[in-house]
Amino acid sequence: PWQIVSLNSGTAALELAYELTDLRDYDHVVSPVLTCTATNIPLVRRGVGISFGDIAGAKSLNMDIDDVQDKLLPNTKAIVYVHFGGSSYGLEAFEELAEAEGIDLICDAAQALGSNLSKSARFSCISLQAIKSLTAGDGGVLVCRDEEDAEKARKLRWFGSMNVSNTVSCG
Image (tube, rainbow, N blue to C red):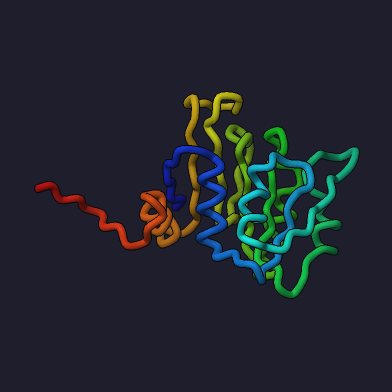
């Protein structure tokens, strides 16, 4: 079953997904060239090598599966799939590719609430910011496939500490 972690923004969900994937400066990721900067800036900050996947052209503004497949390297650790404008075009092909290659699929689903979310992505990151399809004024959600990832995310959202206890004592 999916595990849901509430956050202050969709960008925070992306940051946590990248942290839980343990992306570091020696890793490689394929990410869309056409996306909000919030998708890729956390990767740049981590020093991750990024290859930008081109769009599928007249078919869709989402990434082209063949272009992404050509950009995979031996140290590719993740594919970042963006549901551009809420579209899930090509998602199943990306799920199959990630599984076949043994790499993580991270979905930037900031605008995808109401469309098909991935059934197999390790993480889906949703934004509730004012211009999104479902808004709370601000906020975000990290959808985790794994309960252990969700537990780590809940701890990390508290000031980035993995040592935070689940209980707080006063006095």
